[in-house]
Image (cartoon, rainbow, N blue to C red; front, side, top):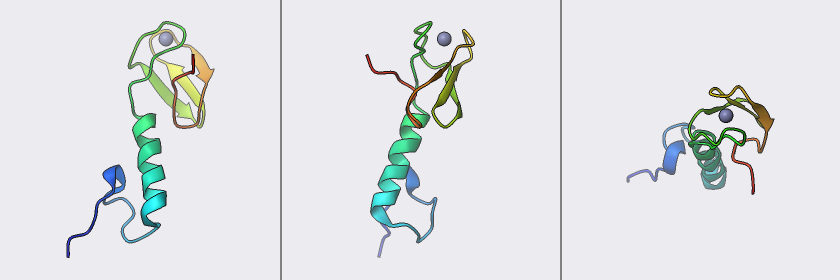
Length: 75
Ligand SMILES: [Zn+2]
């Protein structure tokens, strides 16, 4: 019988943790690695996550806080 793969958590955890934790994990990783708009210079794709909730723009060297796994600020 074929094993069901859950997005980016497909082969990450082996038989552990179940469906809900895998869905939360894949959602967090997807938003963490997505192209993020810098709130200072508005450039897309140069923002990196340096710690949980702390984001850094490598173009204009701005450091700011946002969500733990999502660097886009709400309007
Ligand atoms: Zn910037």
